[in-house]
Length: 191
Image 1 (tube, rainbow, N blue to C red):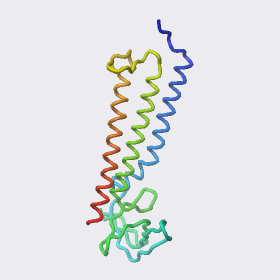
Image 2 (tube, rainbow, N blue to C red; image 1 turned 180 degrees about the horizontal axis):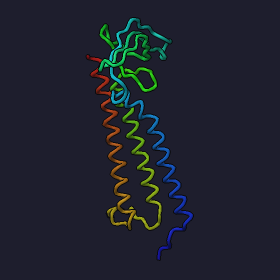
Image 3 (cartoon, one colour; image 1 turned 90 degrees about the vertical axis):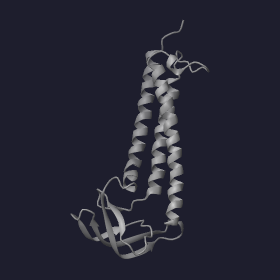
């Protein structure tokens, strides 16, 4: 006869699960803003007609900055003294930018958005994997070969199945997003 898990072990398990979810949410919130701006999903789109561009720094920490006039795509906002940091070389054409909520400017960067998306999906996959291990710890849960996960007592069977699919799916999506980073990077070299 199997004994019921003690209340203290259940409480520790719930605290660990809450900690994993909180840490994952916090890490994702740090990366989400960067992703939305680099993917051009947030901010006010527009163009910067650069009056002056210059290189700042030296060695590996070199980046390009431009100043000029930013005009929102909808024409409702103009900034004659716009200053954009980390601008990629775009030739003589106006530079496409996103006006951020903090008043700064970000140039959309699909390869960087793909890398940040891979990180976000990796966080989801890692959190699901940690929760999967946490759910498999109780003695009444079986992860034996040949026994379907859904055969476990409720809610463990369904939870194990969902977490295993979520972890594997997010990991595959993270790998696909990482591969997309290289595709976009190579495509950017030819255009």
